[in-house]
Length: 326
Length: 258
Image (tube, rainbow over all chains, first blue to last red; front, side, top):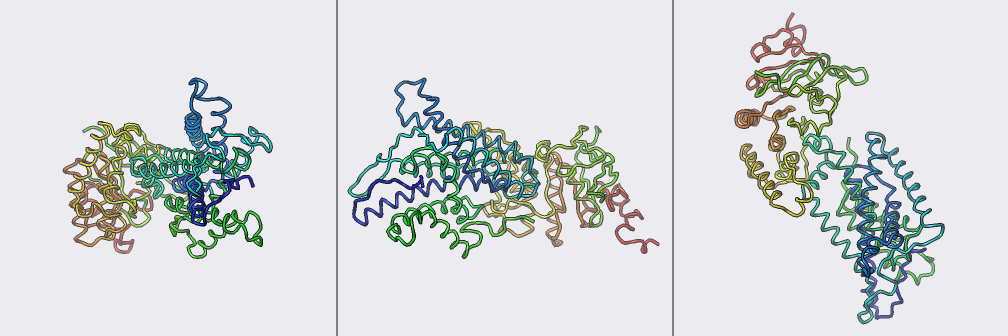
């Protein structure tokens, strides 16, 4: 698999290895948390399970590459722009563009379906997933991998004794923390409260003068932006060389995180993301010598954890017990 | 006096052949406390849902200050100045009393996300203003001690008051109250009646009241419309409506009158 972390050899003591792997697990968990957050926000606000999330995240990651490498924006106007800055700005532009595309998708494909059976809406998102994935795949090229212009290589890392800390992993964790903080602040703001109100009781929210349509647009914009954030970190070293057909499937691996946390819980998305990331990395390292389990067992572990959690808590760790309203 | 604040003209609403309202006409004057009564299933709540845009009647017209509001979205109608409460409390249960009331300020806040994010002078002023208004309502409805509680934890009677407060926080011109005293004991009912009258006197808000509690309606309403199976059967001041044979028949059955 492309996304097998190509973290450089570990040569430290068992404790140092454990620290290295913990940071790796947190970073992977942060990506899953970002992807899961977008999914949960869309679900909470609009009651739509979107299966187009992976495609949107791959599209966003490709957009970063498109802006940073193909168009050289904003570097073409500013000579000697540092790579990090070029990449960051391209990422910001890509996120804004993707948020706009998310809003457009909602307006064109999802809004007319309000009141229709959930099943039909879910089928539409699956259709969107295939279409967006195909279009992005065409741009990338069959079997190709497009670099995103990220400033990190596979060996951009700090070494403290035997502990290895990848720059990209630190960036991922910081971005995830900042994002969660911003979201917490947002949900306390007027628009955020309006969004929570709409998620809880649409009719009552509308009676307060809150436009449900605008809230839906906003939820899809935020969801798409978060998908792109996750997609970017899934498509840079050490996770992958760049954007490829596999990037879209990365978001699918966040699915156990969403289910573990509870479909409609923001907190659950974050906790679930870190549980899955940590489980995957730890299993990848400590179970890799158990040949009976075969290669790539680590990618199965999240689903095992998911099943275990569901057996004990059918609605996930923080999910609302009765989601469906009567 | 100028024209009515809210006017129903020959409004008919049906669901797949079931008539919920047929030929309902009335006008509510500015400052009036207008009640709609009728047996279960008479179409009282349907009338409310037409007023605030949840349902769209097939026939007739609904006018706000002379202008048709037929087919407008509920949030647009709320912006015009029509607030409502619900028969079954529809508060945002996980939020505190204060947050619920501040939500009522949503349409009275026009600070955009930009100045909101950077906490500009205008945003600060508006926030203080909102807090002031909400505190006034908390005082008026005597819910000071519940301010920071999540609504789900409050007793039923208090929740009803919070819902009333949330509607008042919108500074509406017209308040639609759907069974504000349903399930309340005598003492709570009297308390609620006092709040409703206070809201009209002190804040000058016109009110349309849907209610089953005849005692309350006869006490506080200026005029009453009686619906039976979606058809208006009487309209007038409480004393007249009370004596109307049609009304007695609808409530007590044919035999009593015969």
